[in-house]
Image (cartoon, protein in one colour):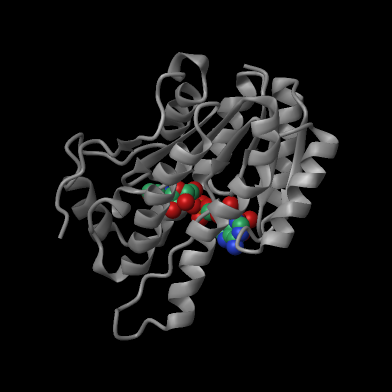
Length: 248
Ligand code: NAP
C-alpha cells in the first residue's frame, strides 16, 4: 500500500492496533497522541523498527483547529502529505442527564466530532490537489442505537460523526472517499479494566458471538477499507459488533 497515514488517538487501544496493521502494509505512520507521549513514542519506535517504515509521533488536542493545522504541517514536513486519515481519537464522560454539565457535553462533542472535522479540514486540500484521499471516521454502534443512557452525549457525538461522514463523502467526491466504522464493545485493556466483572458478563451476553471484539479485528477492517480492494466503498457506515443486541 505504501501510503502516508495519520491515525488520531494512536496512543489508545484501537488506534495503536490500526497503526501497527497499516505499518505492516508498508504505510508511513503519524502516531498521534493527546497526553500519552510515552506510549506514542514507544509505538512509533517499535513500528519503525519492526515494519521498516517511517513514523512520527505527533501531539495535538484535536478539538483545537490551530493545533491540528500545526500537527499536519509537521507530518507533511517529515513524512509527506497525508493520503489516509483515520479519525479515531475519542472520549466519553458517562454521567446521569441530571448531573451532566453543558461544559462536559460540549467537550465530548468538541473532541469526537469537531476534532474529526478539524483533521479532515487540515488534510483535504492536499488530498484534493493530488486526486486521492481516504478518510475513515471511527464512530460507534452508540451513534446508531442507544445502549447506555449515561452516554447520551457520546451517542450524540457519534451520531453527528456519522452525519459528517455522509456530508463529507458527498462534498469530497469523487477522489476522496469517506466512510465510518461503528464498533460495538471492543475489549481494549482500558475497557476491560474500567468495568466490574458482573457488568462485563452482562454486556458479553448481549453480543451474538458471545465475546467482545478485539482491537485487531477493527484494524483488519480498516486495512481492507483503505486498500484498493475497497475502492467502490464510499459514503457508508460499517458496524463491527459481533451482532450486538439490547439497545434501549
Ligand atoms: P482509548 O484507548 O481511550 O483511546 C482514545 C484516544 O483518544 C487516545 O489516544 C487519547 O490520547 C485520544 N484523545 C483523548 N482526548 C483527545 C483530545 N482532546 N485530542 C486528541 N486526542 C485525544 O479509546 P479506544 O477504546 O481505543 O477508542 C478509540 C475510538 O474508538 C474512540 O473514538 C472510541 O469512541 C471508539 N470506540 C471504541 C469502542 C470500544 O469498545 N473500545 C467502541 C466503539 C467505538 P491520549 O491517551 O494520548 O491522551
